[in-house]
Image (tube, rainbow, N blue to C red; front, top):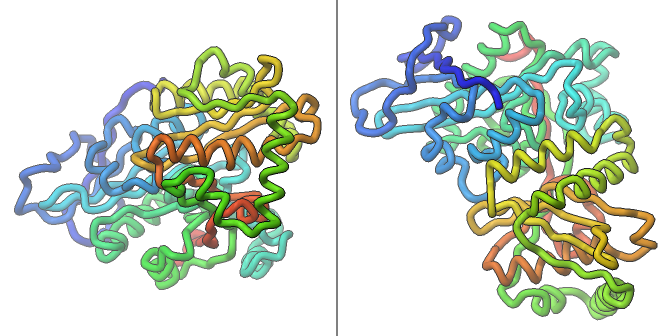
Length: 397
């Protein structure tokens, strides 16, 4: 755990024209204030946030911007977090979670330079143009940088009560000023949802360059469970899904969902490391996976579920689920590819079984996040495009 500290910077003014002040004070009272102008604050630890008010702004579809998950990120990502808050007479009017990424940050999928390079190589809209306009050394041009909207992939967001009006402007002013004060080379939102038109318009107006970064997927959970889910597919797909389920069952694989058991964490960590290694993340370690799983369990308790596949009593696959309100977030997974023997375990574990379990629990949506878009849409997921927005030092007004 990090050592608690209280570093709250406030500005009792509606528009910042000078650097963020550096006095240290206590969090303002968020209830019962009626006459104060908007106040900006900078908090360095989620433990010191107005947690109930922050979580209310985050809402049910942003589990990874909820305060308990911010606790997990602080303790496991190695990122220096900065939380910007805006309060007025009614309480918390806006909030922005940020993280400082430097060239040593191991979270390559969430760094501005590596996201831009990958998207340029894949020919995603706007990425090559931006990369061409920057020095060849993208890390040198963009890092250290401020990654805004959360340290997660998909639906990075600015939280406001007014729909990103004046509160959004003030928070972006503060983020850009913070980046200038700390000599950071860029400010970026890496995964703004296509439907978040308020933030996209605001960032575009402020001179941020954009490019297509990813696709995000989620699945509405039918109240009728798997039977209703299956009925939504073509006859051909229904037959295929039936064959896949029979293959898993006939192989003797048993799949269950229950709160995460600490005794299973070492095996889960091993399996996740195997999966990440398959996709080129050779430096990832089981110890790091275990640390994240343990911290998630500490922060979220029974709201961390594990869908677990066992063969002859041995765990051969898992999916970690974070429960947030009536939404499920599929967060991590891993498989024993040798024991799996070509079985369609991914679909059984992450979709068919999970739909059954989610419906029984009363969940309304399963969020699957980014990546593997073809596989996700083939099993009924809806999708939306994600766009990165980048401001380099001195490029925005």
